[in-house]
Length: 87
Image 1: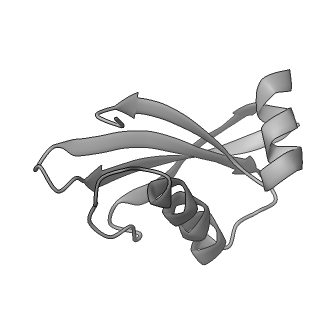
Image 2: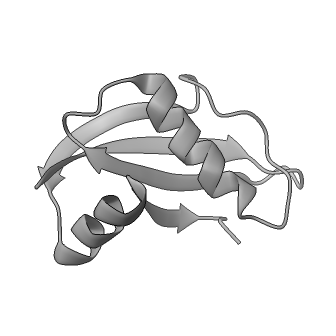
């Protein structure tokens, strides 16, 4: 499965910037759908964050998905890779 990687940066309430990638099947191109996946992920956090829009989230590249990523996408439609300041 080929996936689109959406590079995302969101400001946390403490001022730090969260960096995470939203991974979706490459055929999902509707930005609002992708932003909604990111918002769902942010709701799982115990802290507040700023908004998630096209200013914070952009398509980065397309790559081949691993089995773990494919499994997550099949279950919930997306996969998150936490990069920086996500906890």
